[in-house]
Length: 241
Image 1 (tube, rainbow, N blue to C red):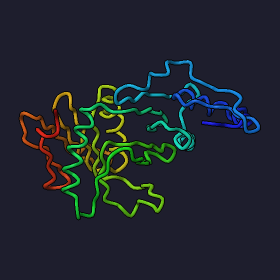
Image 2: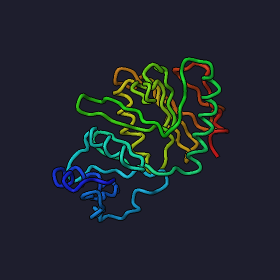
Image 3: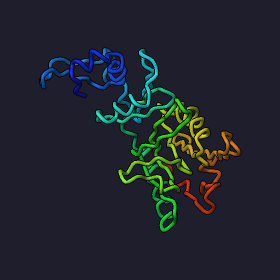
């Protein structure tokens, strides 16, 4: 990210937040690069398999406006939950294998229907509170309010169904923070797919509550079935390696 020296001087705390999530700040003056601001931490710490390094910066929580400025200027991928930035990187093979199988079934089932499934990377902006706007990139979403997709291709609605495939480094975020986020923001159904244990958890959500949940184990069930979309099934044997 290139920033004029006067801007850095006037908003140094904001750019420190960006540095702390491994965004390199190049300071310019009169159109020339004159300095770099780099993190003193291990530059590779956020680049782990399906990485999700968490940063609540020493400068305080990151605002939605600051987050937008960061993602628009960076080539990295980020999520923002409760003022905390998560730095995302490339997923593992088993993760993408599960995503591919689930989305393939979803694509065929929803074809010629009013709802549409999409895969990451695709930003979802959720309003957890008036002063707490979160931005996430679920592995798979099902959008039924397609009228909320603007002419610029940006989506400002609430997905009906969300799928997250768990990885060791994202398990805590996906099972706790994202479940709470999705519960509060109007998502109807949340799938947590666990390739390590060949298991899928489905949570039914309504009015900020978990109204029902069920676990589908590969050896105990032939397929996992949506509670909201009756007839939508994914074969468990196909989902996991």
